[in-house]
Amino acid sequence: MRILNLRPLDRPPSARGTQPLARFDLEAAPGLVLFGMLLSRDASGADRVFAAMNESGRPAASLDPGARATVIAMVRRQMQDVRNDKRAA
Image: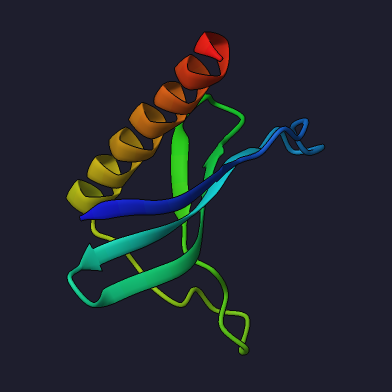
């Protein structure tokens, strides 16, 4: 699995307390890319991953709890690397 095209977001939390943190594409396996994934933090402080919505308004993909935890850790690590690169520049 790889995180592609990470786009950190700088948006305030919504009225419900959910804060979008980043958009990214997820290469789940060689040749299989899920575009437009979202990492957000809910009001309790937990990080959540969401797939883009399809034309019917339903998530285009679903991840099991283990895959979600792996993806969250990968995105958070890459976001930290981006922050570190900006500080070094």
